[in-house]
Structures are given as structure tokens and as C-alpha cells.
Length: 285
Image (cartoon, rainbow, N blue to C red; front, side, top):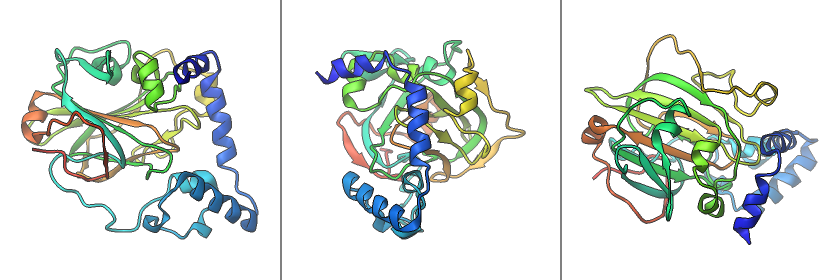
């Protein structure tokens, strides 16, 4: 039944509906009414506001709560390779045949298409790590390792849900949805990619590297690019492990991809079973 509902969603204008939801959650109401809505929203989704940078009464919209920052020292970076976000670590394991990743049982997808779009570039992926962010999670994305951002790419696409029923029902889902991709070079060699995958409902993603750019905006709805858009970076940007690189306006998924040299340097741990994870939690051997 759930899978049928997910497939039915494919008939709807997912991006436009998500944009409309985004407009609603950004509405700021008079303070007393907004406070009541905030309290109900936090209770409904069981959001832990004790870690939030500001008190609940200081948040002026639902999206403001979703994109909340944390108080200092709420997360610890525990090694050279860490979780990029709070959420559920679905898997961290070797790529298959240098390109394939497991989406769900019996379903795989192309890592080269995930990273570069349909105009795929030849590359050999050694490892990938997938973290799913639910609505109650802290929604900011952080670098899972230290390195230099050498490129930033927006890949247009749909906005399917990324929850478990959808992942089990829609083939190549992560490659179908819009993405924000960070190209990294590691000190001493190795390349890696952090992919923020958009999702149904809001669908907006942003990054402090390009503060004026946001996905699933009016412009992208009216001028859906047929191919990836390279967002110019004047020079490589040094990033520390745990440093913030992006924000989801609602729950979604990150996929981190490592090549052979990055794998050898970071030594990720093989994890096949889903488990809760916090940003900065160590994933190395």
C-alpha cells in the first residue's frame, strides 16, 4: 500500500508542491500565535530543542526551527572520517564494481550519475556512506573529513520522498532527485564527494559557500536546467572535519563517496546495519 502511494506521487508536480510547502513553513505569524504553532510542531515531531542555539520562543517560523543551529560543543568530531549529519546511518560500505551503491535490497544506483548527473564522468568509487535525516533531526550538514572544496555542483531533478518506503519502491531514486554536490580533495591525495539529496516537501538546500544560492526556488521551477550547473568557486576552500557546509530545509539524505586514495587515508568502517548517528560520530576503523 505504501509503495503504491509513493508511485502515485510520481504523477504529481513534486517540485511545485514542495515549493508551496516551503512558502508555508517560512511564514512568520504574530509572536503569540507563532509560539503556539512552534510548541505544537516540536511536540508533534518530537524535536529535541534542548540542544538548540536559541529558546523556542525566538524562532519566527517552522523553517526557522528546521534549520536551527546547535549550542556550542553539542557535537564532537571523533576522528578523520565522521558522520556528515544527525540521522540514521543506513550503510557505510564498499562500492560495487567501482560505481554501484545499494539503495535498498535488490535495488542499486550509479554513484557516477549521483555525483556528476547523466553526463557521467569516468571515476572509480571505492566507498560510500548514506545518512538519512528525518524531520526531527538537526538539519545542517558538515564536512565528514578535512580537505579542500574544489567544486560545487547543482544537479536538477525531481523531489521524491527519501524515506524507507520510497527508497524501496523507486529505482535510482537518489539519482532522480535534485542534488547539491561538493567536490573535495584530501591533503596528501584522494578525492571525495559529499552529496546532499533533496526530498519531497520544501526540497530547499543551501550552502554557506554560495549564500545566495538555494535549490527548488522559483527560478529553478521556471528554468529547469537540463544538465548540471557548476557553481563557480574562485579558488579551493579549506574545510575542517565537522565544519558546516550545507543546510536542508527539511529531512533528506547525504551520500559521501570516496575514491581509493581517500579510502586508504580515511579507513572507513564497514557498517551494514541501520543505526542512529550524530554529526561528528566516528566512522573510521
